[in-house]
Image (cartoon, rainbow, N blue to C red; front, side, top):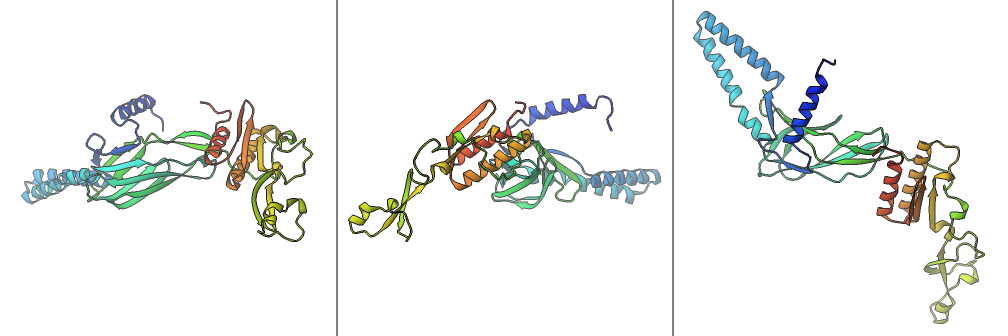
Length: 319
C-alpha cells in the first residue's frame, strides 16, 4: 500500500539514518546506534496495564492499581537490560568473494563483545537473509546467504540486528551500513571448445612440433618415448635414462575471445567466458580476455582471475 508522501518520508528517514549511522566496515554499538521501542508483546501488556489502571480508578480498587503499577515497573526495569544486551557488540564485515548470478552468495561477518560480556538472543539479517545467534562473546563468524539476480557491483543493504532480550517486552535494534559491495559475475556455463581465435594460439605459424617448446621437468624414461626427448646429458653423467617433459605451447596460454563465440547472445557469451576463466585459473594456466573495447593481457594466478571476472561482471553495466 502506497500512501501520499510515503516516498518523501522514506527519503527523510534514509537521510537521517545516513547522518546518524554512516557507512563504515566496523562498528561497536553504543547509545547513538541503538533504538528501543515496545514489541508487540510489550504493546499488548501496556494496553492491559492501562485497562487495569482505569478499572482500578473507576472502582476505587487498590489491588488493581497496585497490579498496574507492578506491571508498569516490570516494563521499566527491562529497558536497561535490553539496551545493555546490544551495547558493546562489535560487528566487522569480512571481504566478500565474487558471487555468480542465480547462485548463493555469502556475506561474512565477525561478531564479538568489545566489553568482555555476552550478548544473547540476536537476530541478524540483511535483505532476505536472516540468522539467529543464541549468544556472542568471543569472536564468532557468521555467514548470511544472499541470492542475487543481476551481475555487476551489488551494494549490500543495511544490516539489521534485533534483540527482544530478556523478556520480549521491548524491541532493541539497529541498522548498520557496513560499506560493503559484492561483485556479481555471470553464471558459469560450460563450453565445449576453447573460445580463442586460431591466430591467438601460441605456436601457430611455427614449424616446430607440439610439445617441444617449454621445458618443465624430467621424468623416468619409458619405453616408446621419442629419442629426441631423452636427456642425453644426464645419461652421459651416469644418471640413467630420463625423458624431458615440455608443455604444449598451444595449450600453455589462451586469449579468451568474445568473437570466438558466434551464435550466442551477450549473456551466454559472458557465461561461457566466465566458465573458461574459472577452469583455466583452476588448472594454473596462463590466460587473457578480449572483450569489445577492452583486452586483458595474458597472466595467471588469483589476481588475473579476479581481473577477468570483474571485466565480465561489469561488461556494459551502468557505473
